[in-house]
Length: 315
Length: 252
Image (cartoon, rainbow over all chains, first blue to last red; front, top):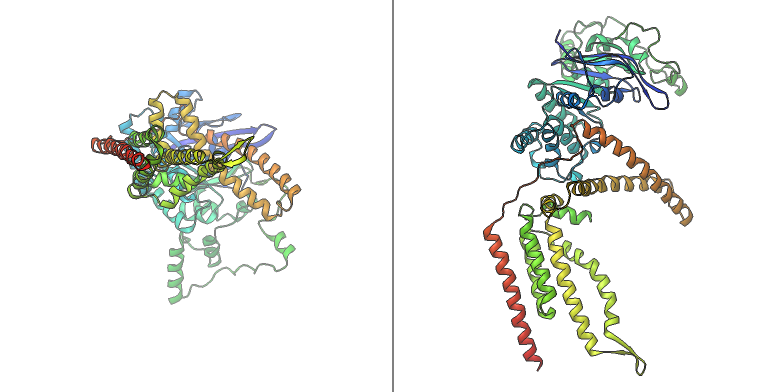
């Protein structure tokens, strides 16, 4: 197992007005592995991320950096945030400067680098995200996808060991998502540890090494992607949907290694076409037709009880 | 404003030292104010057109639009200069008034156009180092730039929100329009505050410590361009004065 670089231990957080956001949450971020934190909207994913870079301080429990409890004084926070970079979901919440170049230079200068060093960092960050032509542009003239990349470049320029992204693919088109994933893969190869918070199950399945299923303020289970996402009961409890690739794989029978990408699935189907795979388990029943019935049977049905009851011990 | 700003960011002269542009614009402004307007204005307009359209590559229409707005105010004052009111004649046309009006219009147009050149060719980030050098406190400059950035964010929000209101018939009739506008303003205020809180989080993630330090663009002063600007200004003055003499001779 890779060393745990950043961890949350049993943290509680309550928003003003007694809104319980996190409740006994624990999470491990292992060095060099891609982690997806999965949860429905409003489950507290963003609150968790804000704990991971010290923006919020847990009411109970602690955040561990390299196994040591993190401190919240100014100096420690500066070191912490230099090591753990957080990219917010909405790039306009992060880009404050009139020009792209200036905005990216902000973090490195705050780290106390000289102008020459900062210049170099900006150059490399622009290159890493393939946005060199945007350097001299005005921030407000960029498209959403471009803004997103500039926001990421602003964090990358600080050379964080852990790069945390809140809903990184939200609002991006298919090509934008593909480009973003390529860029991040390059960062991972260069040694960065990546964390996504997302509700996109299909993305998490194809992308992550490890997933943490998150619901109503705590992590129900964290583990290897395929193992965790094959657990239908768990996903139902967390009001999440099984990734379609896994859904198809399960319909095809208990495969030793379910396909992790669309290409892998197509390859599998092509092979089975020449020598037909015997479907070992019956195909699931077709979905019911009536609207009310559909809603009741669907994982989307509103469940008034908190998720994860009866799943104690997960996580 | 959006279009003007866009030209400032993208024109061919954006990388030139702002002091050079300031020298040209300021020089032209000074000449327009001090020299006889009837002969100066056409030369100044010509130089501005050459610099903005031919030099910086900004469409002539953008320049014209920039000049047109203040010119509208200018034209409204013309009748009051041309007509004179006296107890004996009532309201009457005055020939000396016509000449005054012409002078005022020419002088103002020249002054406006030299400012138009400066505004259309200089992006906001070019001003920061200059403002700092002029002794404007860092905090003020930062607030200016932040406001500049947020204007665009909020303008976008305002447009989207008002479109959404209009889609639900919020602007049907004066009463409802006023009501909707009130709601819009209130929601924008709330959203701005929420956005500021989130921006604070975003900045904190990059170790914000109270000062918005960023790399300033560097510009190189070019002796060649400075010489060109100097000689242009001299030429404008010479042509204007010479023309004025010829004009005076022709009048007598």
